[in-house]
Length: 360
Image (cartoon, rainbow, N blue to C red; front, side, top):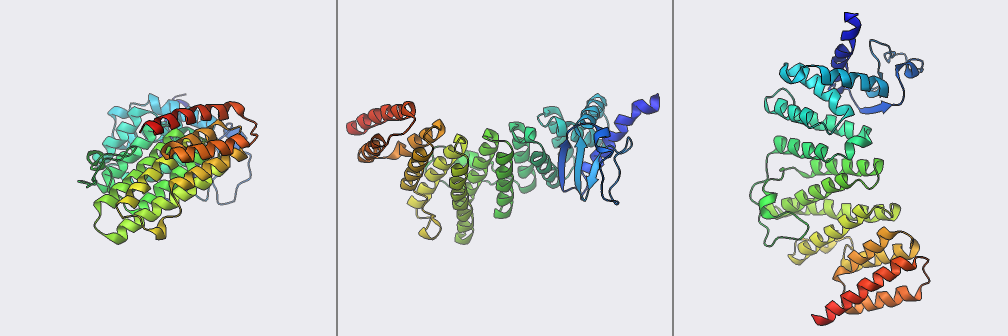
């Protein structure tokens, strides 16, 4: 009996070793129980799922039956890992965050383990990325993205003084930028690739988009803090490429207002860089206010039943002149779009905006 009772706690350690293995390439929580996967045909070299190894592990790809993970989670939280040694704390906390990534106590324990040198923050980033890619639940938790930011600061240090002439609406101040991680273009690309994946797996993922905004903000701070023109242009190419990608993303995800909002905010950043002479035509990518208006207008006329696109158009027009507002209002009026309510709401906003413009 005692041996049977101790088995889940032993399996917590087995799973932890798999999660921290350098061979690990992906993580997936599988539906069902061990019995559903014990009968699956696997390659001869792969271990057969059993009560001693209730996992599917093939060529670095780890599958954990959901009922097995629930049992191991209960075992992990019941162990005295907070008052135990580093190995027990690493094992229990890794199993806990796999099922409950918003478990603040477990994440804080892992921060302490990194500070004490028991956990490598680079490997922690890899593990958290694998969990984020394998679990939609993980990607929608703000605390997971905060943990990722903390790890980046731990590895790369803080950026230090950043010289920005004037604060830019929607973006960090000079004081806030000093606390950003000092990461290079390769790390930026990796982080952006992760946000792209998590936005795909969990549609309209606000926290993933907020992290995307943070990484673009890091690019902006890097541009402002660097005296190396080549390095500035490298970060600029990343930002413009992301804006072009998001423009395509919006065309394929016409209900994702978070993406539309981020594109608009990013154009304000590019407009500032264009004004101060940092953004050159070679990498401009036609990312202008006029482009944004035309893009939103074309999508509204193609998919008029999506309220998010009407909101996108309204945001795009926030910097338009009275003449531009009247021209677009006339163009929409002439089109017999099957969403009169959204159009009427936009026209009400038009009338208020033109009155404001005429008073300026």
